[in-house]
Length: 78
View 1 (spheres, rainbow, N blue to C red):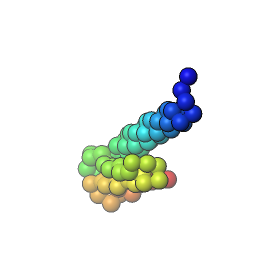
View 2 (view 1 turned 180 degrees about the horizontal axis):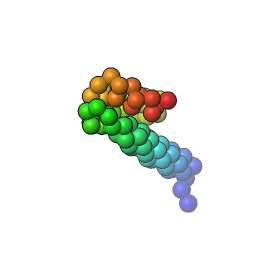
View 3 (view 1 turned 135 degrees about the vertical axis):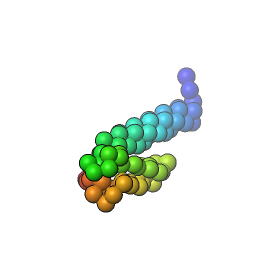
View 4 (view 1 turned 90 degrees about the vertical axis):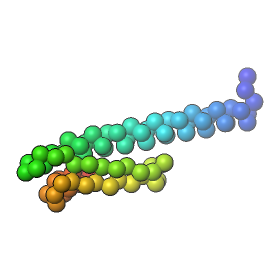
């Protein structure tokens, strides 16, 4: 049976792993959503860069081939 200190560490490790998985899943889901935006005029898809090692630090940078494409992609985040 693990000692109390070991049990807390195992619990914290499991939570950290779940948080990392949830963050990865969130980034991938949002990237998929943004990349579904295709410019009618130019035929290009919007792009997104996700940064941050935690939900508190998470930020997104969206770009498109034109202002309309970028606005449509950013609209998906609302």
